[in-house]
Every structure is written in C-alpha cells, then in structure tokens.
Image 1 (cartoon, protein in one colour):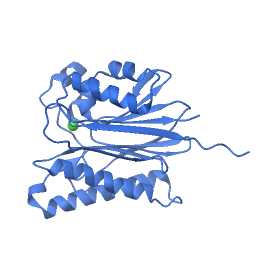
Image 2 (cartoon, helix red, strand yellow):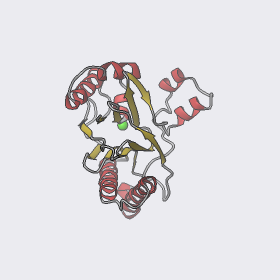
Image 3 (tube, protein in one colour):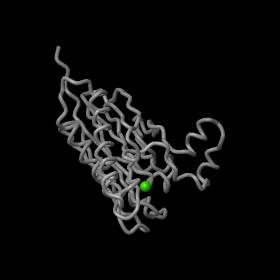
Length: 245
Ligand code: CA
C-alpha cells in the first residue's frame, strides 16, 4: 500500500531589531525540496552579513540540488563542509573579512523523516501537543559549562562570556556539525531561530506565543514583535515549519 507523502508549510521573518544598524541574520527555505536554513553571522564591518548569506546560499544550493541517491545525512554533511569552505576561503583571500563566521541551524525533511543540522547557538525547537522543546544543543561556552554542571543556567544568562560560541561555519578550515534524524508527527511545528529571539524571550514565552491558531506568517510576526518589545537588542530571525497530516 502506498503511503501519502507528508506536506510541510513554512514561513519566515527576519528583522534588524531595535539596536543594531544592520542585519547579520539570513534565512532560506524551499518547501518543495524540504530544506530550511537560518544563519546568524559574525565579524567586523559587513563580514557577518557576508558570512551568513554565503552559508545560506551554499547550503540551499547544495541541498536543493542534492543527488537523491545520496543518504540525506551525508548530503547534509557535504553541504555544511561546502558552506564552511566557501566562507573560510573567502576570508583567507580578503583581510577585511578575516575571522568572519556564522551559525547555521537547518532542517532537511523527506516525508516523515527530518534531519536536524546545527553549528553554533542558533536553535531548533519543536512544538508538539502544545509543548515546546529545544531539540538542538547550543555550541556556546556557557551552555557547555551548564551541561557539564560547572555553571547554573542563571549564571549562564548573566555571564560576560555568553556570546562565545564554540563552533561556527567559516572560522576554521574544518567544522563538525551536529546532524541527527527524527520522525515528525502530524501538526508538529518546528521553529528555527537566531539568538536575537531566544535572548529576549524565555522558552515558556515562546511556547505561549506559538500556542494560538494563526497562520505561520502571523506566528512569525508575533514572535518577532514580542522580541522587539522585550528590547530587540540583536537581529531576530524566525522560520516556522509545520508538518501536515
Ligand atoms: Ca545574533
């Protein structure tokens, strides 16, 4: 018996926030190809913007044109290595871009199976049955200290080191992404976001904002507006992906 293919729907918003003069976040998605990516760039002058847009472009291009005979896990790894190489080699060629890098959080969906890809401290959450769960681990110094029991979550929030990320795309010649697969259930809502959202809003607040019956576009706007109201200190990006029945 043939099984119906799961359809996904998506929407995204990115916003400069209220304090920054530029937006170093970038996103891309293709519902048709099941590819969804959010990046948060870093580096002096325009370097952060360049790094995040190079990463989105390279990952989108690799994953939407992927050879379907290649395992998705492997295709995702190759896309990450290619994006890393593009950014790293550009920064080696141009002194003013030296040290630029970006986070990347992404999803690759094929029917019920979803591969989650992560480098850095952007996050993927899943809202299932009204309960929000963070499903990526932050590659940040303070979060790693918390996971090792050397720092409490409250100390992590106050730490002067909370901007330090331990993995990024493009800052070194090699990178190790987290990539893992999970099964989506009908109605699952995935949120990919930059830290400009999660620094301003608690998980409980995000859960309550997503717990209303509105379009994905409206839900993205709710999240971004709430983060701006809470201060909007950083660029804010939200990409929502809903699994159909
Ligand atoms: Ca940020």
